[in-house]
Image (cartoon, rainbow, N blue to C red; front, side, top):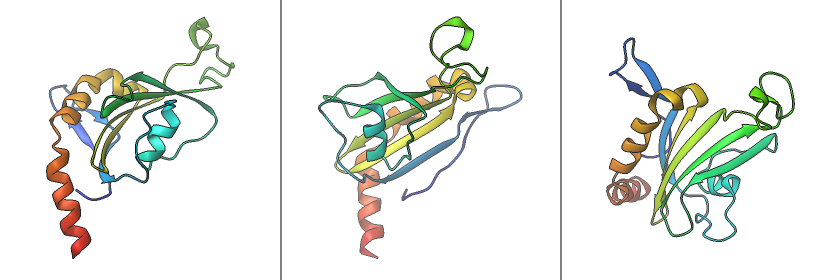
Length: 145
């Protein structure tokens, strides 16, 4: 536990493909917002740096839940046009975060757009299996050392 990231490798694919860029557990920098939700504000609670070069869309979750799925779409698409990716009027997501929080402890996993397409279901399963209460005990032990 503690702060830091660990890569997750999906070994069910041949050759194995990364399903996540990082997975980390940390003490939240601020409570997760429950009103006027913005994806960037939720990520800031998880100590995830954000910028203004695009939008952070909440794909799932609400103020009543302890977990969210947030995706980032840049203002300027990789194809060079503003919102011109494949003629849809918006850019494809380039990064996705899955989060879980409880009692001031946060779990966050991130994946690039291609990684998400390969292993998004796996990353959500890892998040859902993570025990926040167990992590909280470990963080308290580390703080007391």
